[in-house]
Image (cartoon, rainbow, N blue to C red; front, top):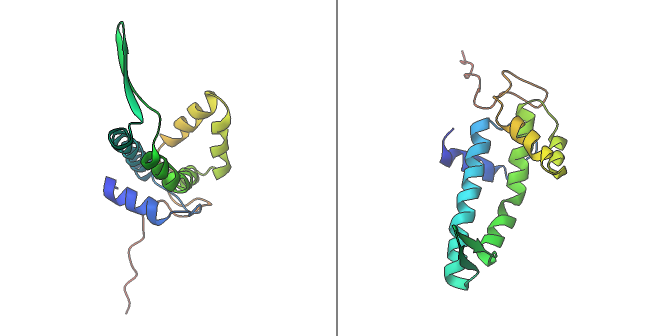
Length: 141
């Protein structure tokens, strides 16, 4: 699955928590969210002055205090991000409730990262068929 297809699929299934999401669909959507945040933080900084450059001996950094555009973007993709995460866990034959392990500091995020980088479970599982493996149509006749 390519970037555009993954983003379109994730946004089309805005609040769909059933079914499965392939590893590529999940990671392309994460990249979309990450790049969107960077771009909108820069635009917020230019339009609203929400960021500043910090420097000192041996370091330099850019700090953004958030802004209206990046906040709206975050709220807009919050539900699809959770939904694609749940579908990704379904692809590994795990309950979507595993997403809540992220609330355990440090270790929860590492466990989820481990889950999300695993390859898809082959074939059909209790959450549906493997993504991208649609059977060929049966000829009529």
